[in-house]
Every structure is written in structure tokens, then in C-alpha cells.
Image (cartoon, rainbow, N blue to C red):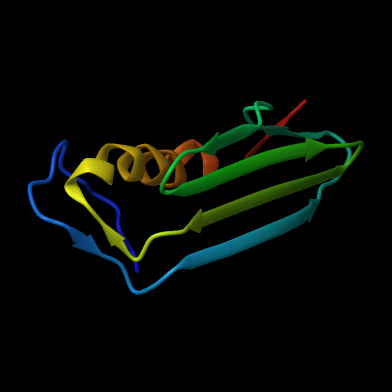
Length: 104
């Protein structure tokens, strides 16, 4: 159900593959002398269409990244499209889909 590029507005309903609930958790261990370059901000967005939660937990050589999206509507009416776009834009933000390490 890859939805990456969305127009600013929509005049007709958008139909998804169904009610969507996906959750990914990545547990990364890294060597001493490396440091993950991540935004430590946790993202929590909830609206009438669903929710997006993204979190980063960094603890002494171990990084856990959790990404979760829930869409509670299969058909997104034009009146709900702005809320849907907020969720999808956050979900597709590149800085929340990759981790970069740097030497300390």
C-alpha cells in the first residue's frame, strides 16, 4: 500500500487496501566509538483517520526504533484527506526511516 507522494488536496475519495495497522521495531547494537545520529524526538499523532507513533530509544550501545501506523478508515473522504495526509507525510519522512552512525 505504498503511498509516498500525496497532492495537497483531493476532490474524490481515496480507497486504501483496508484498515491498516503496521508496527516495526528495529533493535540495533553498535560498537563503542560509534554514536547514532538520530532525532531523539518521539512522534505521536492521532486524528480522526488514525495514528502514527515513532520513537527512538538510545541506551549505551543499543538503539531501538519503533514505527507504528494505524488507519481506521478504508475510504478516505475528501473531508478527511488533510488528516490522512498529515499521518502519511510524517510516516514517510526520510529522517524517521534511516539511522546514521558517526565516529565519536
